[in-house]
Picture 1 (cartoon, rainbow, N blue to C red):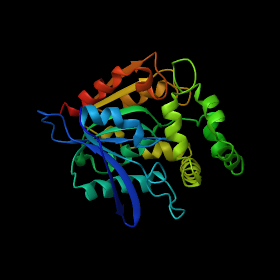
Picture 2 (cartoon, rainbow, N blue to C red):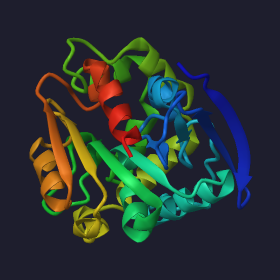
Picture 3 (cartoon, one colour):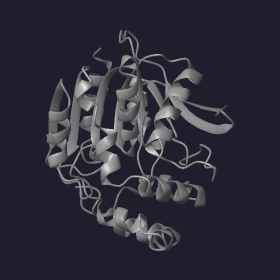
Picture 4 (tube, helix red, strand yellow):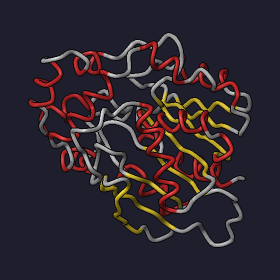
Amino acid sequence: MGEVSEHRAEIDGLPIFWRSAPAPAGATASSVPLYLHGVPSSSDDWLDFLRLGGGLAPDLPGFGRSGKPGSLHYTIAEYDRFIERFLDEVGVERVSLLVHDWGAVGLAFAQRLPERVERVAIVNAVPFLPGYRWHRMARIWRTPGLGELAMGTTNRFTLRLISRESNATPGPMPEGFLDSVLDHFDQGTQRAILRLYRSSPSDVLAASGEHLARLEMPALIAWGMKDPYIPSRFARAYADALRDAELLELPDAGHWPWLDRPDLVKRLVNFLSAG
């Protein structure tokens, strides 16, 4: 198991936090694993992955310990450019991507700069595909006034209640996960979530994946089939949209499938390091 280090820097004046860990002894991959979290979490999601396979895991702007300025719009395009600037800052040219939930912004980067992506793993990611309709909670967040009210009433009790549908294991999400979310769920993160969802109607999502078919690198689609937020058909839709994709369907897992199926961590790490 590799030791995970924490880092801080500024990119164009924006404070950024990320974690890193060295590759295992004997690893020969020509790329660095890059883990991109979704909403409402942070690089805390990736600690087990980093310990096992090494790599990089930033807190995306608006989340975790990174900056959350009101000057950002928190759009897919902004996150795409941030990924490029982050990799330039840390001196990494080529990555193997793992994207989860809104970490799908990494797919915009991959389509724009495919030469910098060796492999891509897609895990219950927001569909950059036609035909997706936002889930109930997202529709609330996308509604002015109602979204702000929902953010203001989020606490441990409501998060435990809502999270009961997020995993296949009975009960709410693990306490450690809830702690991680609540530790960073300040007004800056709430604003980032509202702006991100409101800037991303269905047509924007579909347009953001219009060049997926051009991606030629190996891809693995790993999908918890009990995801209440993203219908399971989008696992196959992602696999069909990519040229060289393997589909791994997990009938006993939810939106954060590695929490229901810890064996998935090794499966994903092995895929990312196979290059």
